[in-house]
Image: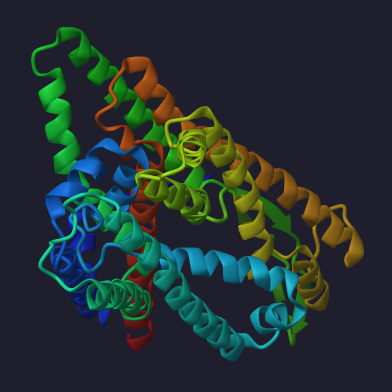
Length: 444
């Protein structure tokens, strides 16, 4: 299992002085500042107080508001956040497995194919953003007092949909710029920043609940201990690898013998990192959000209203059905993410090993090696998927046991995302530091 070491003071100084890394960090901070600024700009003609009260009492909207950094609750121009882009990415990746032409773009056409897929994702993001903006504005229309009466209706709805769509596209652009020119995965980092910005609000709510209740204070201590243990488990899962020993052939060049030393192929226990969690949330919350927004409207037919309310309750993040689907979705998406990663393809690995004369001890090259690797990857991914699914449920279970419900929204999912993104940032910084050390060594 790989061991994780936090950067020392010298590492941090080296990081700041490393060639190109300083600019990446500054650029990332500027992009984050731009995102936070946009999240505070309100949409014209909306009475924010009305929707904020709805968001505070609705689990789904409150949960989405956490990931947008409060932009949804305040009905800002970034109210849709990174959601449409994440959803579009998931759908394009899923469809790429089914449609041969898209699969060819992903696997055979290299960088040019990936750019085409990225362009398809951007176009589909616009479509989803328009649809979600339309549903959101229809929902606000049914809330008494949510829309200022003095604004003209038709042009107001059209302009609001355009602004919300443009805001979502701008967030997508910021995330892609962070990924290309900054540090870390832009989409994950934006979600991370949104969660971090919501912590003071959750901390204030929790303090008001436990301040004068000794039993609740003890429950809070137990809850925080469970969170701490869960964070340790997340770090272990993110860093754990399964090492497959590889025997390399010896080569004689003149009087010298090269190679012959054993190496290993590292297969991560959790190959998808934090992405299966984010994907699972996006898939589950998309229909839940639509149901929640529609459910707030006043339908004239009581039967329709009752059906929507019941369906919304079943899909709510605090219901047992949601957590069962959440667990199963994490397991399935972990396997899916492992299946599309280039460095986790048994046939390709076996072909490359045979090409260079390397082999796994006790296993013949070629097809037997591919079958053996496939079994190893299946077992490793299965253990990682189950572990990730279980860890994702622990904090939510703890909130019910300790009765600390005020920070339930920042529980399992948010915790895993925060730790996962933080580990990814640390690993990327280490990569830059190693690259700088190699550059210095070569210059010497």
